[in-house]
Image 1 (cartoon, rainbow, N blue to C red):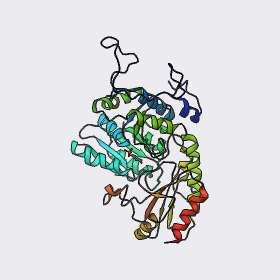
Image 2: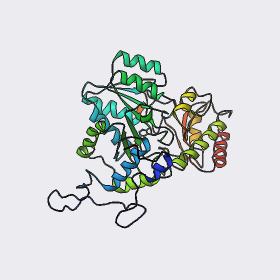
Image 3: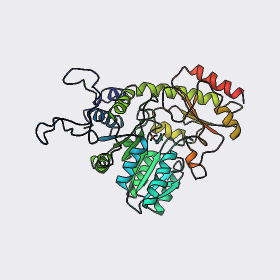
Image 4: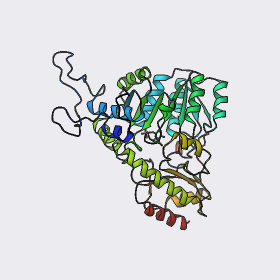
Length: 385
Ligand SMILES: *Cc1c(COP(=O)(O)O)cnc(C)c1O
């Protein structure tokens, strides 16, 4: 299946699953809003579709596109990133199984495993994945069923060596999952580095316009997709046709958007790093970042998320409420710049846990606006501190 795919990422993003409509020639395939499909005699399905929870042509188009982006054999599209994670975890885990998790993963992932799956007997262990030796020790101590990698992490932009951690995990017989939401497949393709499954919140860079919530799983191996695909239908957290179509449209410009996000992110990080009011900048594109070398190897750009630490929590809160172009809002990955105060917003659910975010940290999702305007906005907000 992978052999006849165009080699250029940008070409795959635009054409995979997006052939013109066979009947009308419409260059953009129609959005199929139908919940059900006429049968030519009992069981006589015209194109394999019978009911839209089980399958819908617009969702199929998105799933084909997603598989091509990550160089996987199959993708499944869900109603949200967490719905995708839930399907994968429930398909892969049994009571008593353990998930080994980075100490800086998305708070909702931690909450799902600890508080939804925990009561069903799933265990959880947390280590610093940016320290591959610590991961090796943890795996040697006890083999987990799943090793869950997120890189760059949210919101501290730690970098995990995907190839190395995947080898360690596979040696212990574990399944390797990478949440690739922050980098997007335009900058990083974990399946090529040894991962088994990629998870996305397509709400972020893939959709790219802050107008749709969605999630996806992409598999390196068709067998691995069987159980999650069964759950996608059996539990039913599918994406609707309009959501699938909006995501497809967003993905077509992913390659150019990520180039600009990375360029603007780098400029913002370099502007903030020497600023007197800024205590620390977290961005893998800075040579001073501890994960810079690994990021440079496994990513083709450093992305648009930049976090910074101010003097203290009060300064971080004041700064968060004083930008004009950067909108104070949760989420990330859209064309417009957003600012998030993790401790009280996205990461409020992990306050007081081992995943808590320092109260002086602010996360920027640097958009693709004119970079001078963005720097001016940050400069003004810092001046007012
Ligand atoms: C947003 C996000 C998720 C969850 O996705 P939803 O679409 O909000 O359910 C998972 N992982 C990361 C890294 C995210 O940023």
